Amino acid sequence: MQEIPLQLDFVALIMALGLFLGFFVSYFLIKKSWNSNLPNFFMGLLILGLSLSMLEGWLNYTNLIFKVLWATNFSEPLNFIIAPLIYLFVISQFKNFKKERQWLHFVPFIFWLGYCAFFFMQPDAVKYNSNIGAMQMDIPYIRVDYFISHDPMGIRSYVNHITGLSFVIYNVLTLKILFEKSRSIGQKLWNTTNKTLIAIRNAQYHFLIMIAIFVAVKLLFGNSDAGDYFLYLYLSFMLLMTLVQIMNSSSYFNEVSNFLEGPVLKYKKSSLLNKDKLLILDAIKNEMHNEKFFIQSTASLTRLSKTINHSSHHVSQVINEKLGQSFFEMLASYRVEEAKEILRTDLGKKLTIEDIAERVGYNSKSAFNTAFKKFTDQTPSAYRDS
Image (cartoon, rainbow, N blue to C red):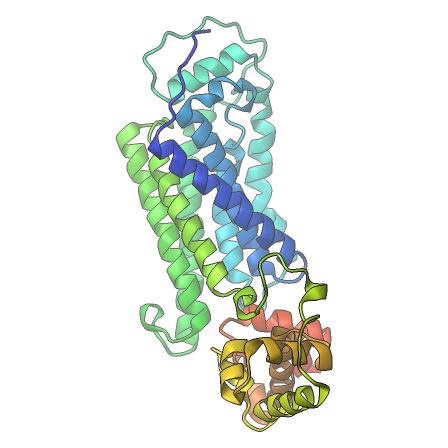
């Protein structure tokens, strides 16, 4: 086999950064949403799948794949899991989502994974030739005798066509659901005020752009992987924007803490007297009970501290010590209690869960459902029905 020089340039660096962000974000999304937040769980699986696909693309682009020939085409089955995960991410955010039989969406992935076993068991020479062809390299192939066909049904050359068809079908289904949902609330999808629909619609724009890039690359480069790095560069940009969004919405930045300070030592040196703590606690309760501070979608520790004219550090300390909660746990408890009051009224029986979520301060139905179930062991719909 001919020695292939490595290609390490700026594009390879950007893709490597995207890989790091992808695995980093997917790990925390999956870890934090396991069995508690299905949309985020599906999004975590989606980002993980995209990251694994990008890893193979990065190995191909840098020619490192020739150092690890056993990994050739390892992510090919993932082509059939991306579109279903996008679809599941969307429909899991709406009511009446049923977990039963959703595994059927993964049947093509399971089939292709098994079918690729015929290729995975081939000798390195076969994978060497496959990479040369995929990357359109002007390098002679190695003569090799197959001990078993790597494509017994003769369908592997159509993987890009089938992948494209999968994306089209699932995106049509997703858009159909979004249009139906927007019509059900008397709005147009591109001009809706529903925060859940806005977030999903904007995410869908990015997925449609990815499909357009995929089609353009295949039209320009044919049935090869030579131009896939254009798609992975855009994906790296998406992952960076996702991480920025997560950091912007993180509660970490609403807390006052020194760098790497342990939580046990957080208030150890506080000079706040107990009588002052009680005064701050009364001010907090007044804002929550009488002013309903919690129904503001922009409610934060900083805003509450400014409202009652105390430092964020002292307000956080009082909430932690006197209520045994973090600020966001306290906020969620008030919002859930308010939601329970609404759900028990005649109006609450007519409003959608999304509307109730917005009335108590949540920007998304999934976050509302997660908080409500945490405090009541029921979903808002189940609580209303009971």
